[in-house]
Structures are given as structure tokens and as C-alpha cells.
Image 1 (cartoon, rainbow, N blue to C red):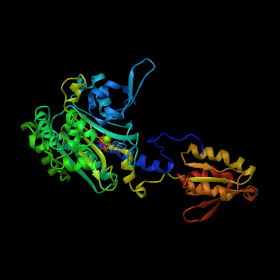
Image 2: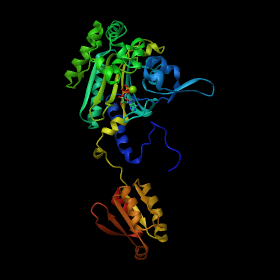
Image 3: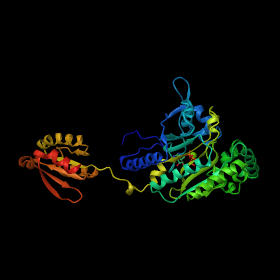
Image 4: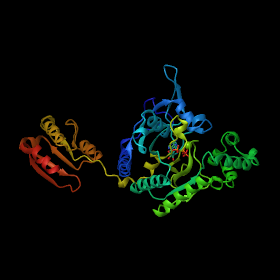
Length: 418
Ligand code: ATP
Ligand code: MG
């Protein structure tokens, strides 16, 4: 092995796994199109301030997880830890809101967070995410959740639970925050160091602490649901009624919070019991204040992100159609190689997925490679076949063999295989 290895928390995605990735991605592209979304691609590198302003100073991501460095001109830049802030930045920069009031955008790509690597937690991971910008109507929440549900339905990942909550808004949040602090104050010495800090800076984050001690204390903490203002209460009710009407199953999880400060009103996660501690496969919520916070006009919005690594782990490999080679040409000896090479090129011009073995190695080793590529047929040409002007075509599934004249090889094969 070389002395070079990938960095901790950074992972290669090898050919054996790529089928599931591409299958999930193609289902995502189709599903998003079905729901009227357009794709957007933003850069991986952004100014640091975009994330500190949007995600929030007192969040794990901004406090300790961002890959931030100085560019050559001294500017602070950050590898994106999430996709929403860049999409909003692009939305404002290109005045998309002036073109039409409602935008439904989706993205896919790598995100970077300097977290402690463990099962299901990487430092470079991938997300597919959606953002609906420009509508406060609870129907948007329902529609987005129906998209998320439909997407997972199509990937045939089962045993998922949709958990929803409402986090309130700037009107009702201060009241809830005070109630939380009053509750946690009694347990302050028992909370972990991080949560003691969060108590002052961001008490909502205590509800998301993964430490057992803090989880036990948080169990009886007040829920934002009991502190919602009339508008937020109405909104949450309408979302639940909308889901009921569509028969989309969900559970209200009164302590669900999100790791990013910009969320308001509806917040949700799609969880599974199949992945151990890292049980969230997708997460999202409303962020009605973010666009204004980033310098735009007050614009309501809602979005989610699916964790691709966790999703791919849940996909049954048997569902993924294999990308198989149609034909493997196996020449034995120089003359056979010279005869088959132009045929290989002719077949590829007919879009037949084909590959050729090396004339210098034996049939056994060529057959091994044909197997590895999942070849449906193998064409064998040796000294004898050259002398007799024919080739042997073997169907790898049935093992049936037939002879084909060399003179009409290209035509016969492309007819047979296309
Ligand atoms: P978690 O609670 O698991 O840390 P999060 O609240 O940080 O998740 P989001 O930032 O909302 O998650 O990201 C949405 C989804 O992206 C998560 O539900 C998860 O599936 C995936 N995800 C987030 N961080 C990672 C990571 N470090 N490695 C792999 N997947 C991740
Ligand atoms: Mg996290």
C-alpha cells in the first residue's frame, strides 16, 4: 500500500457502491421534476460570513466544524457545511425573486464539517436538498413533506418515521427560551460542558445534545409547542391537517430542534432505527427569517436535506439495475487481436457496451474480467477460429454457444445485441 491514504472522515466511493448512488440520484432528479423543482448548482467555497450569519454563531457547525481558511488575498473562505445558505445567497445575488415570486430549487453535492468521524458521520458527506422560497402557506410545508415521503417511497427504503415539530418564530421564541432556561437552571451543574455553555448562548441546542445525562434531563423540558403564538399554532395545525388529508404518517416530536439557528415554525426529521445512533436520514424546516437576515426582502421559505451516505446504506442493492457489459471480446493471439479491434470500435459506434480482453493473456483470465464486468455475451476468437473464418459467441447466462462467420461479425453482433 502507498503511504498516502485518504483523510480521516473522507471516503472514496468505489465502483461496487456507485450503482446505488446513481440510482438514488436518478430517482431524486425524477421526483424533483415531478414536483416542479429546478436544479441549482452553487460553488463549494463561499465567504465565511455567509455561514456565520445564517447558521448562527452559537451552533456546533460554526463554533467548531467549519473548514475555514484564508484565501491568497487574505479573505476568509469556508467549504460549505450545508446547502441552504449558498442557495439563498444565489437567489439574492441573481435577483431570482424579481423574476417570479415562488422558486422551488434543489441541489446535490458534497458538504464539509469537521466532526468526530464515526459510523454514519463523515467530514465530507453528500446531501440532496430542496428549498421552496417565497410562500408562507402551510400547504408548501405539506407539499414538501409529501415530496420527501414520495422520494423515500421510490427508493423503497422502509421503516422510516417522519417526526415533526414547530419551533415558533421571533414573536414566541423569547417566551419559550425563557421557559427553557427556567427549566434547565435547576440542572445546570449536571449538564455537560457544552450544554452549560449552550444554556446561556442557545438553550434550544440542549434539546439536541447526544449525551445520555443531558438527554435524561431534557426529557421533561418544556416544548416549543406549548409556547407558540396564535399564528404559529394555526400554521402547525394546518400542516398536521394537510398531512392527515394525504394520509402521510408522522409523529409529533415535541423536543425536536435543529442544529442551525435559522429555523422557524415547522421543523422535521426522517429517522430510521436501522442505522444505530446516527438515525436521521433527512432533516429540514421553515426558515422564514433567513433571507431577510442575509440582506434580502422578508421572504418565507422551507427546505430539507437528505444525507446521501445514510440513504445509500439503506438501499437494497438487489433493486439497483446493474450496468452490465453487453459483449466481451476475447482474442487469443496476435492475429485474433488485430481482427477484433476494429470490430470493437464498430460496435461501440452502435452504442453497444463492449470491451475487449488482452490477446496476450489466457482465456481463463479474460473470462474473469468478463465476469467482473457482468458481460452478457463473450465472443471467443483463437488461432483455429481465424483459420476457419468464424468466431464463437457464448451466452453467459444460458452457456449456449453459436458460431458466427468472421466476415459478417460486426453486422451480426450489432443486430443480435442492440
Ligand atoms: P445530525 O443530527 O445527524 O448531526 P444534522 O442535524 O447535523 O444531523 P443537517 O445539517 O440537517 O443534519 O443535515 C441533514 C442530513 O444530512 C442529516 O439528517 C444526515 O442524514 C446528513 N448528515 C449531516 N451531517 C452528516 C455527517 N457528518 N456525515 C454524514 N451525513 C451527515
Ligand atoms: Mg450534526
